[in-house]
Amino acid sequence: MAKYGMVIDLDRCVGCQACMLACKAQWQTPEDYFRTWVKHIGPIQHNDELVLTSFVGQCNHCDNPPCVPACPTQATFKDTDTGIVLVNQELCIGCGYCVEACPYDARFINPVTQKVDKCDFCFPRLGREEPACVKTCIVSAKIFGDLEDSNSDISKKLKTGNTFVIATKKVNPGPNVYYKGRRKNVEAIIKTYPPKKKDTLPAKIWSNVLRPFVILGAGATFVGSLIAYMFQINQGEKEEENEE
Image (cartoon, rainbow, N blue to C red; front, side):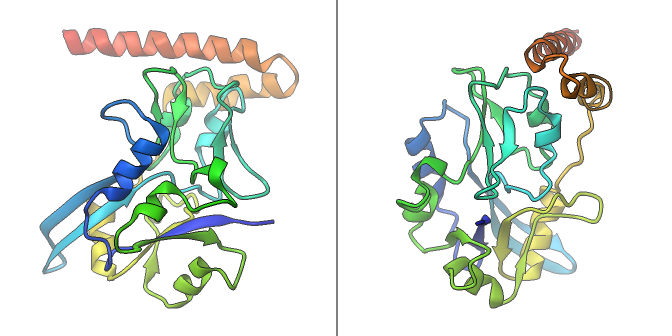
């Protein structure tokens, strides 16, 4: 079986956002919504040094993705043949629990489809051509491939050293997107955009109370609809608080 991942070379990246635009053009995401993004960091003071770098973010296709157990309908799943975290749009009810669970803020509810959306490594193109962001990068800062294949470009890149993941001691779901470059740049990214452990009340109710009923056969669709209703109530309460 394969295990796909990506290396982002911060020493090569010029922050041009070509990858971001290519992804948007490929998947036609709504205005202000992106599957991958580029954020400029600095110059900031970090460990007695000034740091200037770019954070190229997206779904990390983690080994232990917290979005998967958070999904009440099993719409979000990790593909066993590729290791890529995918979303079954037919099963997705747009409850947003996976969005809340993602420590990288790499998911969003598409306002047009009312379904969850995110990077899937251009899964429909897999085996035919590289992901749109990789193909478009003007400085070849993104390397995509099979981590299990020792002869793949990505495996060779990782062997050269100086590669890191966006993770901390408290939050480390096993990301498969690596960042190559100087440690201070990666540390600046983690300091500015740290992965966040999110354990919201609705997700707790689903994981600890309702999920066992689904496993026992109570019906994922019914329970999923109930959770979506609870989510809407929760969102309504938040909007009322903001208005006050």
